[in-house]
Image (cartoon, rainbow, N blue to C red; front, side, top):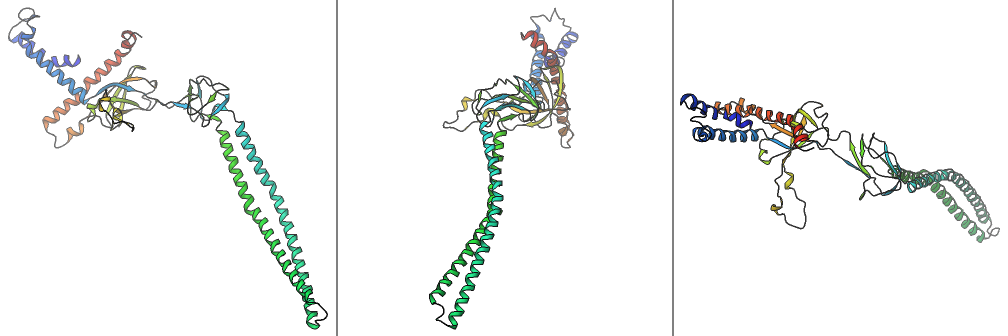
Length: 410
């Protein structure tokens, strides 16, 4: 309607003024309800053509959409393991702080694993003094073996000396027996030395390794125990939290509720523009939005992201070929809008529906040296037509509450 009124000022109104003051025709006499078309046919035709061109120019260069939503993220409240609820710390819908417990699962199995790991560490610690006592014992056995070996060596040397002086004094069989005994005692020294080394290796290597393994098992058991307490990862609010003590929670099938972070839906809007505007939408474009949850307010925005693909064309691999006819509705071009000023979305309820206008700017093309005068004027006109769309948005912001409350039947 605004476009038609504007165009009529340049087409229909001059035509009427010409008929009235130049040709002398009067409204109600020569110009009647039945002769309007014949008398003002050039003005009416020009008005309609100019209106269509104006609407096309405005909507193409300054696109508008009602598919704008302040999306926010929800997080399902689920544990990492299946378990039965032993304690509930929040109600149906309550705010929670980061790190605060939400609910706790039955942890008797995990507590038993933690206690078992602790006792294993205590057992290894108790083996350390026993192993040190074994080292002392091995030292005594080694000294005893060396003493016996030395005694056998001395006795053998004495017998050999007597046999050398007078073979008849000592039987050769006695010398052989002492030689065997000396070799046996030498083996006992070797065995005692190896026993001592084994005990020392057990103290320095084996027992610390067993203790480290037990400590790792304790840490794993403690992690499993900590997982039985489900805590909030950030500040937020729980909704639809109907969990009660005794309920069985399965992370694959039954979430306990929904968690909504405080920062969810406070950063940007997501708008779906028509595919025909894909060549117009650019990062950095200025935009304006008005939302139902914040009436009578126009929020300045800026385009920060323009997705270079359309969600309606996505597919998931399967056993059937894609049939293009199944895409019954053309998808929209997803655009991210962020507030131009800090706190621009304050007061806008997450999930709210909005109306958005985006305004293209041809300033760089106008000031370019290779741009002709006629083209520069045309680009100036295109940029100036953004005022029409801005006015329409403000009228929508003014009428939206009445349209929703009165004419919408709410």
